[in-house]
Image 1 (cartoon, rainbow over the protein chains, first blue to last red):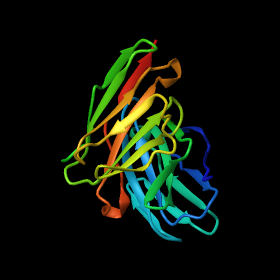
Image 2 (cartoon, helix red, strand yellow):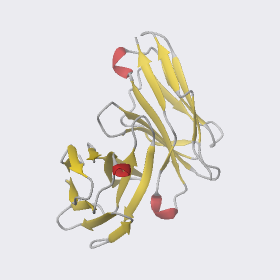
Image 3 (cartoon, rainbow over the protein chains, first blue to last red):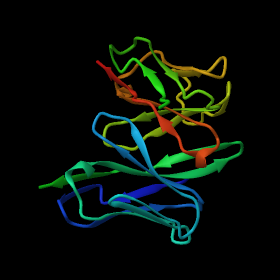
Length: 113
Length: 114
């Protein structure tokens, strides 16, 4: 069974600081997604990482994938309050004709002034 | 911009009652997913459709949950009877099979069972 773990589960950081969220998964996969969820809202796609060594950047967020270590990171540079949300990583597993996403537990990010 | 539509946004019901949720995916998306998200956790897949066919319902509690997508477009998820533990956010998502497999999520239905 595929397990996806994120850490930390909760992160409080000051504006202007840098930090990294980690996503570990238990079985081989060649595709990983990062989503953002604001309180009471739905999930918004941030990044798709398709291969080992993939790196994607959008604004203050940068995501990377190491398929050999089964690890993805989401790095936050010079955090601002608008980045406060819960961030999920999700890993694809193929089962016959279906491709199934398994989500991590989520990291709740709170950026304070 | 195309969106996944879900209704209702909120539903309050008493245990043992029946509830139904509706989802209309992005036009042209052949794959439709229903997820359940318990507060403080990540979404968990309940059922996946490819057109009108179920391709994965291994996590669907079939004694009380049912899902259909009769014409391969919109879909309904039903719970009968509802139990207290069913209180959660029910999310619908769709994907085209292209665009790197990204799943696009609707706003969800927040279910409270009293």
